[in-house]
Image (cartoon, rainbow, N blue to C red; front, side):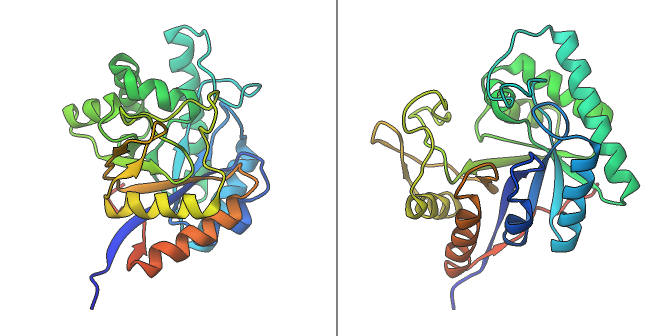
Length: 253
């Protein structure tokens, strides 16, 4: 009998893209936009309600304060203003979640903030310090072997390493920037194959045609994609067929 393994399947939700209800039953955790690139008190509450119905664990999804650019560009902002914004975003979702009796189990930076934290130790320290202040028991989610993971290890803070089913990687393990061609995997079969490779820890193709191995705890699919629902159902099915249990990482909150 094949051994069952556990993998978390997460999605970025609460971004006003209209797919949340259809995606939620196929994932085990979600990252909820909390006002930086999208989202407000009402949308956070709606997403948490859907998560409750599907027994999905919730996380905060803060970003650069850049709704115009959907948080997918590095903006010119002072360190003080960024920290103020991140605190405001985390306090907002913390307040809504507390009112609804739902613990926030992780924090996953969004978009450009996610990518910048992967390569900037200083930014990672700022994010971890703010997380410790506002949501002291929440894990951090990010790229494996990133600066954010390094800082979390130094601070003895739980880190959830994440891979992407629908994004291409460079040879150094960083994501191909969205501004470059073929940064997003459009073909659903390719997305399923990459999700399975990530879950199994086997080599996957980089954008240049080489191979890298990414060992991850969680796999992300993007809720704002036109094919997001199809991807969620297909990836869920493929992982289960390979004897994976779709389950969020449980830790004390």
